[in-house]
Picture 1: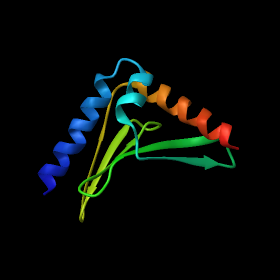
Picture 2: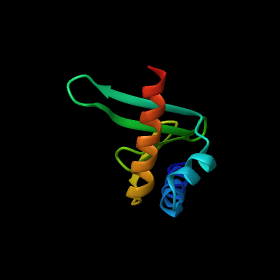
Picture 3: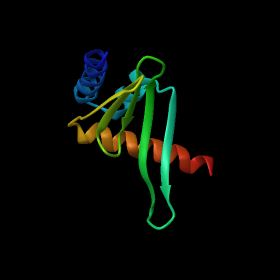
Picture 4: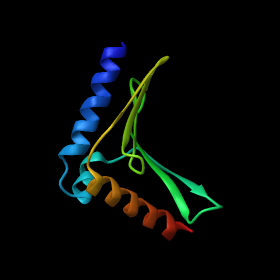
Length: 102
C-alpha cells in the first residue's frame, strides 16, 4: 500500500507544480477542508493546510511550507513541491478568507 500512497502524494505535488496561477489552483483543487495555524506570539498565520482527499488516502497540501502529505492506514509519505508563486498566492488567499471571518 505504501507505493500507492507515495504515487498519490507525488502526483499531487506534480499537480501543484503545474499551476501557473494560484486562482487556477483554487478552482481546480476545491479543498474539502482548509485549516490555519495561528500564532499569538508572531504576526499571525503560520500554516495553511488544504485537505484535498480523505479516506484512502488522506492527502493534505501545506501551502505555507510547500509540502504534500499523505496518510493511509499506518503509512505516511511527505514530499515538497516547488511552486512558490502558487504556494504564496494560496497562503495569502486563505489568510484573507480567515481574516474576513473574524
